[in-house]
Image (tube, rainbow, N blue to C red; front, side, top):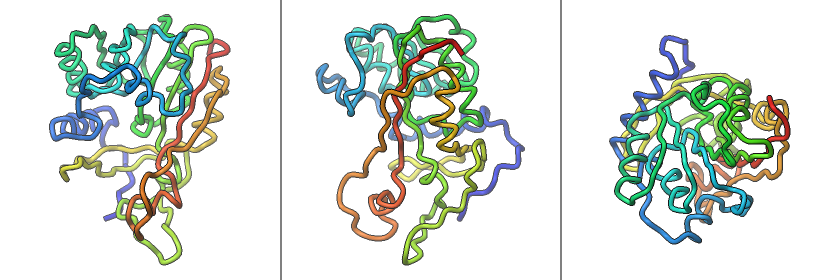
Length: 264
């Protein structure tokens, strides 16, 4: 069934926090703790396009990236790490992994649209896994990120591609392509189901952000874009509605690497 447009009945923070609490308890891909690996493996996993100048990275903010993965990985590279996430269960996974592996993490439960408790910090890198799809205002996100980065600090973010988000949940094949059913309007929100690999699911509020907002918004917030890429699908497209086939029409994610050039 097609996702329903959100009518504003629920606060996005409350609904998405509850959804991710459920997903974290039921084995979401983003809630599977990191196993100890070599430094080279960790750097390649965190930075598959080799954009990060690791010699410049000592103080890292992992934003919307709770779940026991990115923050402990950066800590394993001897970085000083702060993890911010809206969901206490996701933050709890960061804490448990860090404790088990002997890493020191600062963990903060907060909305990424309000990083006021961290304003004035001097992070070398803000690292954001796919999470802007859960907030209504990406311009405000970028402004908040700028407030916690040191001058010339860098921001790596992966976003859900707008075209992929516009597809319906059930991905019906028309014989020629896939229909776009979500309006291309930045901040447009709707209720959709997010699933784990085991078939468990929860209702989240998702928000679409246009390329103008995702890319142009970075420039407006005082950043210079250094790199841009789309995540390519792996494997062979075996037929309609197979995810690899869908992504030959609409790649799922886009990655941005930007450097702060002014205060915002």
